[in-house]
Image 1 (cartoon, rainbow, N blue to C red):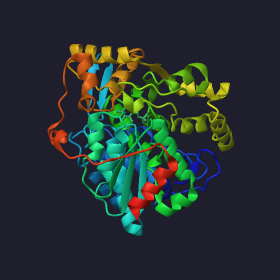
Image 2 (tube, rainbow, N blue to C red):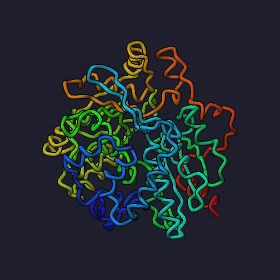
Image 3 (cartoon, helix red, strand yellow):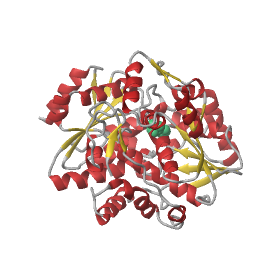
Image 4 (cartoon, rainbow, N blue to C red):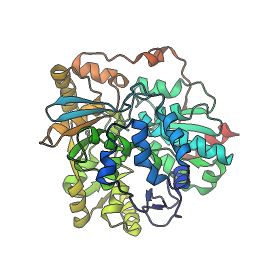
Length: 460
Ligand SMILES: *Cc1c(COP(=O)(O)O)cnc(C)c1O
């Protein structure tokens, strides 16, 4: 299996190389050259299998010869061993045809653990074989950073630097990043917003000298291996609701478009997904794009669902690549236009996007009202991101089962949850002492050169 860049100018790589590299050298994102498919019988055969067994079957065709079957099974087993629910991704029912896929039973209580725990084990296996060392730099709006730190802390061949927007992540999110004592963990609070953090990360990758000097690797949602890990739970949940004999729809609370793009891959692999609904908060660039056909940057307005507070949605480029018939030059052109704030999507490409994706948006008030109404009706306490999805899903209910993705545990966002429904969600026992642990982080200016020197100094 070979991986190509969405902008057509970077070297073709193996799974291992694409995973270790992250962003392509032409600024694009790696995607598989072809999308493997599972037959209806193979999908039906996932029923009754454990999450780990299903993960192996779904992901194996993408791995090529990077790992043997035995190695890959062991990697998967280690990745999900720390999850606190035997199903890993259990479904609960919210209403007659509406289900919640709980993706928050991992070590940092958000769905990003599914990808990050796997990627930690993939890196560990690949690097210990080659004897190489890498520096992971990640930008986070909150949940990616803690998930990365939890996955890489203490590993001997990796240093991990996480850039997060100072003062714009929740206390729980910050403490999850700043309390691990391992020396290879570096939490950096950038005086800017998430887009500033993400822009700094992209610039670091574009600086070849710096990239080579520190052996930079990215584990942001642009990393193909992360998208791949997330494909699995679309299969396990759809199969438990009757796929492949029955269609299933999904509503996904979306920021960087990684999670919902994984759903798109599942669909292309043969899973009968009817609707894939993009749910955004008030930072609704993707919803506006679906409505108007123009992808227009606006400033970020902080919300109660901070992990979706972004205005440039990196993984959307992968979807564009497909609807532009995989023409790298066309994508490079759109991304150049975006530098001045906007690009327009061709009618043909828009038609194809609308064939696959629906969309909706939830305002702050609607998000809070959904938390409160769901708690009153079902007893289920939703995190604000999940509430955005549930609100938008309710506008798309039909006779096809709808699965809303519950991307974080409500205790990660206690203030917003309590304000909405009066209940203060408690942290699970394994994290109950989070607020007693010592914090360790460095506040840094939103300045690329300063960031680069700091990273070099820490590694010296
Ligand atoms: C990251 C995150 C999202 C958005 O996921 P994307 O893959 O960036 O679209 C939604 N909810 C929570 C809780 C998150 O941490």
